[in-house]
Length: 177
Picture 1 (cartoon, rainbow, N blue to C red):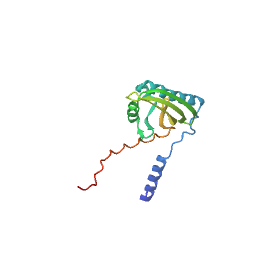
Picture 2 (cartoon, helix red, strand yellow):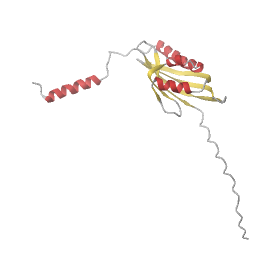
Picture 3 (tube, rainbow, N blue to C red):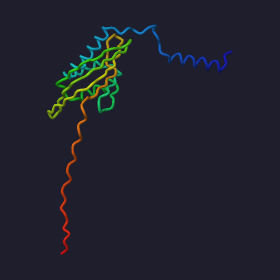
């Protein structure tokens, strides 16, 4: 007869083993073809951003993507990320230099530098340059999608506008009548 202690021990063992990472023997090798595929996906991000082709841009993102834009909270999930991307001003210049691509198994990354120009609604152009790092995950169909993307500006934060001068006050007369 199985005691309650033995049963509890068996259940705990089953629970622990169910939470353990599954091993398929060996992780898939990260190949030069994987590096090429990641670089192509990064290029697709760049070109579809400039073209404002949001349908194609969405194909570069995993469903659980998280974007970490500068000076803003992270966007979690494809829908929130697409809302953020669609609200961004039109990009008229977007240059990317990839410095490194690597990975292991089904996880890859790229990092590098960018230069952008965006056009604000009032017609003003805003230039930026900075660095980025992206994590990619291999999908079931073998393609690579952006899973986590972080970027920041290398430019200094603009100085705050000078406060408006206080209006001059009329001095009261101190003469006595």
